[in-house]
Image 1 (spheres, rainbow, N blue to C red):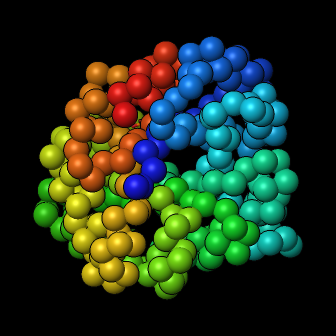
Image 2 (tube, rainbow, N blue to C red):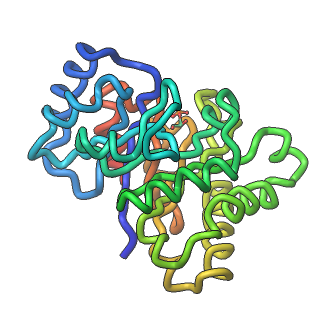
Image 3 (cartoon, rainbow, N blue to C red):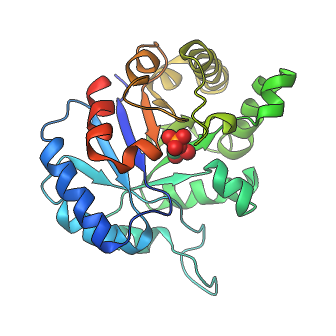
Length: 249
Ligand SMILES: O=C[C@H](O)COP(=O)(O)O
């Protein structure tokens, strides 16, 4: 049975004090979730979040990392550094990283390699831009993102890979992919994985949806067969909204 997951990506929000406030509220609201719940604070808040959530069901994850183990990469953070503050899961390939920080399928493949070497897990994001959706090229775009970054790894690696479909046109815009649009892409990607690795591997991969998920639309999106949860941005910054989304899965 593949995992059901709701992960909150806080992006560049919440300093140390705001992190503590939000975590206190989350601990009050989310006590015994029936699905995996994760939050991804900024690097500066990871350790305090980890300490504050020790013994709690909410996992603290990171938003990004570098592919090298150490060295002259000013401003970057490695997998082992993340592990040293309790992080076991890293979001990679978010469209904001691809758009603003020039991340490519090639550099992402290296990052996924570092995740695997460090026995960590990744939530790997993929998704088309608006023009790809309009021109109908979105299947080709998502297929090449998955193949280029992830098909160099063996079947075993897929035990450590969670996917998150995030159509760029739906992120932070208030415009959500319809449940049918999400299901269509998720099922397509599962088939792409099955064609390469076999159905047993593909059926075990959790595929999350991200892009303007809110308490009001989460249940409908999560009701789709191949949607195994959500990667939540804006709505993850309010404890009651995030709880409502967790409850909807
Ligand atoms: O990582 C989360 C996604 O970018 C979704 O963000 P959003 O829920 O604010 O649209």
